[in-house]
Image (cartoon, rainbow, N blue to C red; front, side):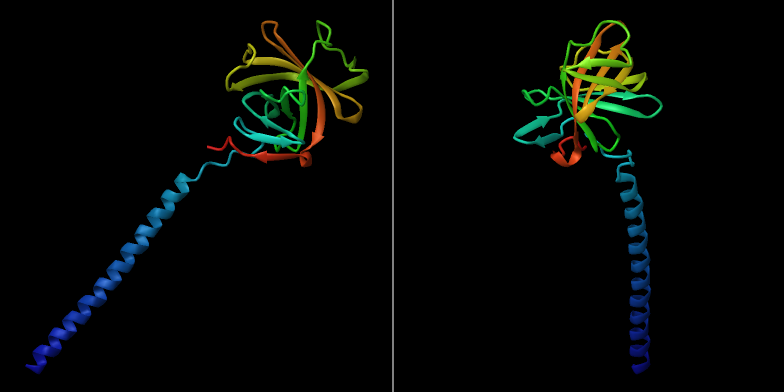
Length: 197
């Protein structure tokens, strides 16, 4: 009887040991599967965050809602323009001039640019502006209320004293968007991200 009791207790102990080992291996396998799926769920790195449609920039006493986007790409980032309805006298557009949104400008449409090819120097708003860059880029748009755009455009950026500048986009088919800009440091803005997925 004592021998049978010892064999029974030994069997129970062995079974409990085996079950603990099996459970531990199953939990480890489940954790590995969860980690693999967690990696799949992480969004792919998309480069610098920059600004996105839906974001809000706080500048001085104004909230600038970035409602729609015109992005230029010329074998890499050129710039992004965001239409800012309700920006009033502060800005009709916000220009992101680098991929990390450290170089920003407030912009207003202007009709001071003469017809034809934009020269390397122009007097705009009482200041002489000089060529910074010129090129051809692919155009991507996002959002509502944008002027008529095509998939390609020639762009010209002129700069001058005190962060003043001019950006001219000539779209295929003849339409033009000319913006008088005032460059401002990123430290003057507070970003309220609203454009994250």
